Image (cartoon, rainbow, N blue to C red; front, side, top):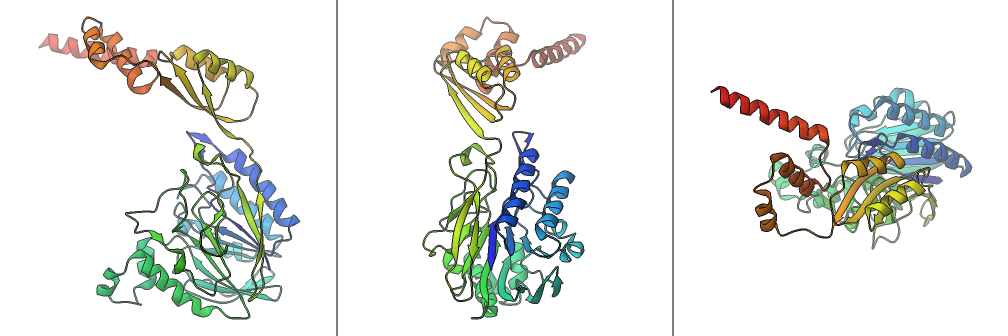
Length: 407
């Protein structure tokens, strides 16, 4: 069976208020092509389909159109689970229509998937947290554990231990219990997999994924996964990598795009594996394109920054500007940079000469309020305040002064 493991698409995500949907649409166009070229039997999407529980309509439309194209009229099967960013009920709302295209959607760890035909393939058995599928005569048992919040985990295990014992079990132990219980469905004649969205010991957070840690309570040890599992397809961490000390079988596919400047130093991609019952899988990492890179420009002066904006005016990239300067950047200088280069996300001045605060306070005593406010705002924000803001503040002060005189 040829399986493609991806996840953390975060459709609808923005960066500093700028939409990434155009890049995501480009990615999905290439992704559909990759699935066809690699003759994939099963596509696994390991959670965080959307960036929020209330995604924009464009994101939902793009997702469902992509799934339909991947399915190739039901000839290919897809398995989708919810992540911590997704609304589980909303994600699986299209299940009745998706099934006929070979698309399986799993909302929570307690979900029971209907058996029967899914496109050209079959779900031959299912229960809380697992499915057995038949694809072209090959069988696979998959433990499906969408984002297991503590509340959802309690719902799955409430009948396994009484209330007093449950209080004594930490998150890690309960996850171990969950996988131990589900692993009884594994057989020697099936491909045995896990699909989940969680944070595993040894994984590194990379900036744009939302932490699910709380004093270590929400981290599980990789030994929680069943011994008989052949491959564990995880979502939540945006860096594609193999969890240490797992023999290469516990992996995060990562996100398809760089979603923050902390992610720009490693290659995005997905995993394609070929696996048979009782045999070690073969795997390859397929790199993804960077459609619009995130760049950090470090300039030694405002003049250098302006020149760099001019020289790169027509390049498609997101920009964080860090500028060394001995004075605060004026509104006019900011406007000039942003006029020359669109998609500047942030302009951060690195002030290299700051006066002693006591001296500054002494120098402010005889200055008008407008000048004091300008210096304070520039010190706190790193840029001069806009004229409209200053005028608004002055008008408010004048109005209050007039009211006080009236009394």
